[in-house]
Every structure is written in structure tokens, then in C-alpha cells.
Image (cartoon, rainbow, N blue to C red; front, side):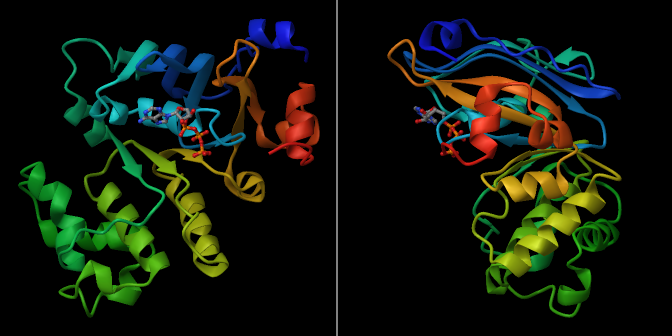
Length: 274
Ligand SMILES: Nc1ncnc2c1ncn2[C@@H]1O[C@H](COP(=O)(O)OP(=O)(O)OP(=O)(O)O)[C@@H](O)[C@H]1O
């Protein structure tokens, strides 16, 4: 793609085969005057894992964090477009972002358990939401779903910080799912983990998609091929003097990796640029 063609480039819309839970249409995303992402339509399908891949700075995290208004916490952030969650625009004026995040939870790059017991970490969101049911049952269920119960059931009062990195990340996943969200956004959840812990979290993701819809940012292309049903490839457009991210193409993971439509995708997955 030459510079002019790249400047005009807008990815062909991906026609999702199944139900779309989040239909994200980015027109422009700014941080102050900086145009970080443009023209990207990213449908997130129900009970599937959608992977976001692409070189550093192409806006993967920015788009992911736009899906539950996490970026609202950044004062210079501005979103132009729409994010329809089950047909409702989460950026509509009357929508409370705290409620959005109750349905669309997030797991971050660095495991970030709170400085409190394992039990209290998982119960945190339930208490915040004034959950009236049986907290013990919900904590146990979340820890079981996060494949951590067997390892921690006898030490629930120990600090969450006493766990290994991989266990801490599974604890954070348990914390995120305890309030039973509908969608889980995962921003490079394995980047701080060793290969064994990474494998465990990947297996967990595959189990989680039976109950949840997952959107995953990953730097690791093998990880995308292992877990993502659908892959969205983003790149950086430097044609207008800035570094603006945009969606190049999106499709079933196999097609993206084995028969990409765009030359840029082919070059990226074959390691010609990073
Ligand atoms: N809080 C912020 N304020 C200003 N600019 C930001 C902010 N967060 C991100 N950016 C910029 O927006 C662009 C996209 O960043 P983002 O982190 O979304 O990319 P990414 O593809 O996830 O990158 P990486 O793979 O390196 O994590 C980058 O140029 C980055 O510097």
C-alpha cells in the first residue's frame, strides 16, 4: 500500500456469522489533538474470543478500552463513533460508565490484586454492587471458573499478593467474573506471565468463552492463533505525518493467518515488520 492509498484505506466490514454483542464503530479517537485511531469497525461476537493484533502503538488497547468506557478516566480522551452493546450506545449521554463496566469487565496486563485477602479480592465487586445473595457461594463459583479454587480453597484469608504471578492473574479474572459480567476485555493478560502460567490462562480463556464473550489484545501472534476465533489486525498510518492506528482487516483467525486479504497483514504475520 502506498502512502496515498493508505491514507484512504478503510477495512472492508467484517460480517460476523453469529450474534454481535458489541458493535464498535470508531470514526475517530483522540488524545487531546492527537488522532490515535480512525475508521475501524470491530464487531465482537457472542461467546467467541476476538483477538486484536498489530504493531506497537496501532491503538489496540485504545480500542479495547473504548469498549467499556475505561478511557473516560483519561481527561484528554475523546471518542467519535458508537459502541452499541446489545443495541444500546454506551456513549449515549444518559449512560453511566460504572454500570457499563459492570456488564463489560476488564483484566489488565499486570496482575493487580488488591492488598487484601484472596476472598476479599473476589468479593470486592459484589460488595461494591451491594450484592444481596450468598457472597461465599459466588466467590467459590468465580474461583472455580477461574481454575484457581483447588489452589486457594484452604487459604482464602491469605493476601492476594502472596500468590504467584499466574495465580494473581487468575485471581484478577475471578474478581472480574464474580459480578457475572457479559463480556470480558483482556488487555495482554499473559504478557507478565511465564509460559506455564500463560498456557493456564489461555486454557482458562477457552473455558470462559462457554459463558462469556471475550475481546483480547495480544502481542503474541501464536496466542491469537491458539485462542482467538476471530482476529482483527490493526496497523499504523503514518501518511499524514502522525501515527494513527486503523483496522486493516478482520476475519476468522485461520483466514487472517493463512490467507490474509491485505498485503500489510501478510507482511506483519510473516514477521516482515513489528
Ligand atoms: N493516555 C494517553 N495519552 C496520550 N496518548 C496516548 C495515551 N494512551 C495511548 N496513547 C497513544 O495512542 C496511540 C495508541 O496507543 P495504544 O496503547 O492504544 O496502542 P497499542 O496498539 O495498544 O500499543 P502497544 O502494543 O504498544 O501496547 C499511541 O500512539 C499512544 O502513544
